[in-house]
Image (cartoon, rainbow, N blue to C red; front, top):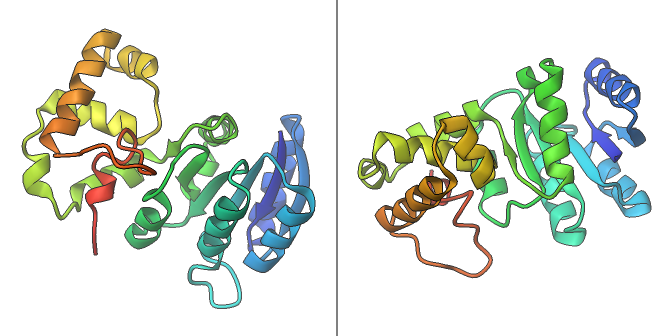
Length: 214
């Protein structure tokens, strides 16, 4: 795949470049701030962008804002965002829209090469890739805990798998249940969380995350 990187840490950026090249991918550009990232995408339009949330000049949300601009201007470009910590505001801001081709990964996960490459591949294929730790912490902090309490343990498990971007067949395999059972649990989750079909909102992946607030 054709990848553009944005990471202000030279060491991590060069490490990612080397890893991707060794895996046979093409690195179109490796930049250090959000403005350079948007400019690079405009010029070359890669398959996937990998971007740190916090980058110069303020090291706040430049990377996230650049990622969201890329999603708006070039929806066919996948975006995998990296973050040092689980940052609730940034995660929910990124994930409260269409999640096809979107990922949110903790930087610690990058050193687990197989997991990082798997997330990158899922985003490239137009699927979602949410870090399990991000999902767990967001679910635990939900301001709609009363709704979550309606879910059975099995439904919570299915929801966590959904939020990580897994398809029904994969969830069935991971939880050792049938695909029809997965579909039944998902329908129950939507009902219990009082989620109605809303245009432009992915109920499947954001069944609980859309309820999160500050």
